[in-house]
Image 1 (cartoon, one colour):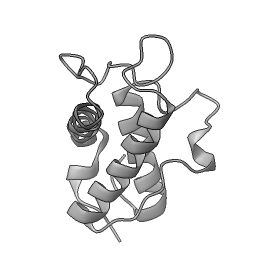
Image 2: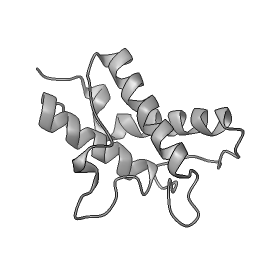
Image 3: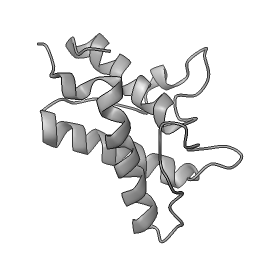
Image 4: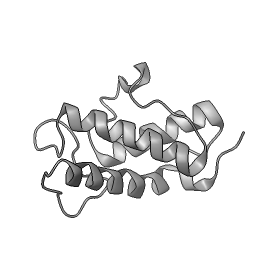
Length: 109
């Protein structure tokens, strides 16, 4: 099954950014502005803590399934890549999602 172009890396960055904003707002935390592909998620200067990371991943999984009918697991063994954590930045997470979708469902990476 081939997935739509909307699930490419470039299209996923705004989805990750808006979901991050929602997670931060729900937990009454400051939303960094502007949120872009370079926005740090975890680690020093990161926008979220480990609980926020779990919430972000779960919300993104649910959003992708609801909007596109695709099931993806973001916190599986592939999250530990040799290039570093895919949760470093919004862009790195979007790239991770695009790779997972390409591998599992034939989406454009």
